[in-house]
Image (cartoon, rainbow, N blue to C red):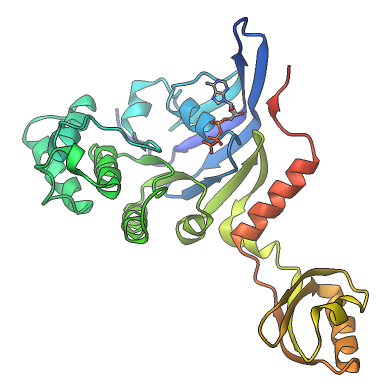
Length: 323
Ligand SMILES: Nc1ncnc2c1ncn2[C@@H]1O[C@H](COP(=O)(O)OP(=O)(O)OP(=O)(O)O)[C@@H](O)[C@H]1O
């Protein structure tokens, strides 16, 4: 079957999942509620959310390991159970647990065979992907001798062996030291340059800022934010940040403005205030004898956005156990 590059790698519509629990299966947990999500070819997409948000459930539905309670998920226009769809997907689980007595090379070769590859073509591809993840020298060692970072890299190699058009990575950098994290990040960037679409599930928000084009934030099985990373961050930039010398936090707070944040540093105070309040606040600070040494638009990080989305979602209805 020929590959149609224009097909959407992932298209999720109105997806929901309710798990049944307990001896009589009479308790229900709502893991996903009306989730819509589209990944365009070549996009690197961050799937963010706190524990229990529904990230793994989404991935399991895409991998056909869990059946949805409602809605649809499509991979390249096909159902996740379709063999052709499965062939186009590479997956790295959160804690890869490859058979420890295989060598790295044997493990990646096995993954290629399971994808229907064989012969010299497979041998060459295995060498290539092991090189890509910098595991050539350790490829002949049994996996039980590998560090966590090496296991993670060999797991990525097995996902890449069949040249997937879509990579699904579940927490690929968790538990790694900064060097290991950097290596995995670089590999993701290389794959992105090759045009591979990547769904990247993580708790590590700086990784999303560094790697992703778009991101979705799930809380309690609902989508609470979605957009390009740049949009998500700039949508928050409605505040100004002032650096004030000569006044204490208490003196600044006593001026009666609604301040987003005040932080005392060694000999100055950092104040974050809504755009509209910045000018009146500045005037008052100067009148009280303060010196304003910096005034700039506040740079909100994706982390700020994530925490804010979480806070808002906690105040509204969320998923979880429903009966
Ligand atoms: N097999 C299952 N049976 C019952 N409930 C489940 C099952 N799997 C997940 N859940 C529940 O569904 C909800 C969503 O879980 P899910 O694992 O998808 O979240 P997550 O975002 O991946 O969390 P984490 O970051 O902790 O991995 C949680 O309330 C969880 O307890």
